[in-house]
Image (tube, rainbow, N blue to C red; front, side, top):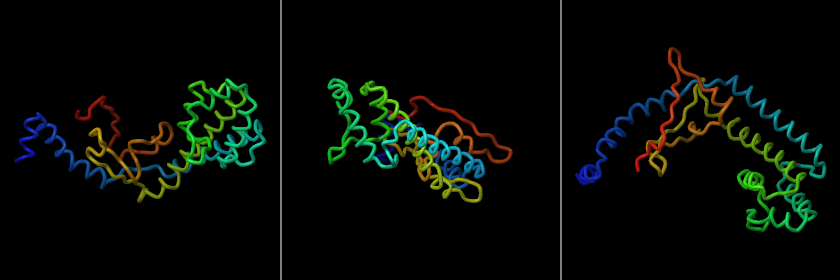
Amino acid sequence: KVLGKQLNDRGMVKGYKLLLSSVAPIDRMMSNGMPFDIVGHERVLRRFEEGVELASRSLNRICPEIANWDSPTQVVKWVNAKLSECPLEDRRSALAGWEKTGGGALTLGRAVLTERLSGGHIKDGYLRKVLSRYLARQRRKKIKSTYGSSLRKLVSDGRIYGHLRIMGAVTGRMSSSEPNLQNMPSGAFRGLFKASEDCKILVCDYSQIEVR
């Protein structure tokens, strides 16, 4: 009774009933899963593996000082050395606001590097070139790691199953996990999801649909 009164006072009865009516179909979606192209997935992963290898070879050509591009310590040491060679104003521009670890080392997260490069903080052309290619390599590695074997483990009988939660996000939107089916990379990965026989996949996106 208390909940009913609160919903009625706020004009949310219709929305609440709509949410309740969605429970059964969403449960069926989770139980049925979605056909997944396993062979295509392996093909896409091979392309990303080749992309990481090509990026590594490119970096080795233009920056042979770094022996292991998977070592943030080596990359940060090289960045600091190159910045020390830059004019004072350029060095200050590059370092201003650069996020650091608890130990004081520069962080090399994708968001941090993207902001440093796109924001024009790093002026030195050679440093920008190396870090841009390093960032591209890291993006490929991240996609391969997140949507590679870990995604394949969630496929059973040629179908992939995920957890969907009504109002799972703080904004009221639906959320998804194991895997996050709402956040698949655009391009080849999304093409791996297939409609069941005699069915079609409908793609739509509502703007500002969450309850406010």
